[in-house]
Amino acid sequence: MALREILIVPDPRLKKECAAVTEVNDEIRQLLDDMLETMYAAPGIGLAAPQIGVMKRVVVMDVSDEKDKPEPLKLINPEIIWESEELAVYQEGCLSIPDQYADVERPAEVGMRYMDENGKEHEIEADGLLATCIQHEIDHLDGVLFTDYLSALKRNMIIKKVQKLQKTKKSA
Ligand code: GNR
Ligand code: NI
Image (cartoon, rainbow, N blue to C red):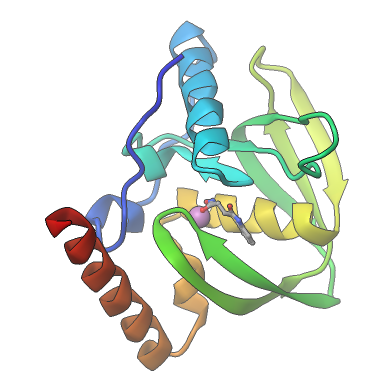
């Protein structure tokens, strides 16, 4: 396993669409393990491959409570197959937009299809934080960030803040 560097906005790779995985092999399984290690270390509840500069449709997640046992999810080519009309608002954050948070409204429940690390297909239904996280991660695979749902004014303020914070971090 290896820790990978997480890209920060405005890295152009975070705005690109990722390619579907065509073969689930050891390279993909290694990628999934590296991503989980990187996500837990951050710490975060989800991580999409483009956040470490790998432009493939691969996601890891764990929305379990810290005090319960870990529940890692490894998702290859995840897709939303249905979404509820009902919406829910969550305060979202993103490891690629460090220390910035904003309310985002999304479908409250979704259905998702994905392949596991053995290439087996699954379909699950999700609500609550898991539903929000699934949508946030699949957005990453299409080059969409949570800030894209905010006004241009709010979005630019957040990006500027992140750039400023990154500069002070580098000179410290
Ligand atoms: O760690 C994360 N927390 C989070 C909180 C609310 C909504 C979405 C997320 S995902 C984020 C990790 C991340 O950036 N994944 O892409
Ligand atoms: Ni994110």
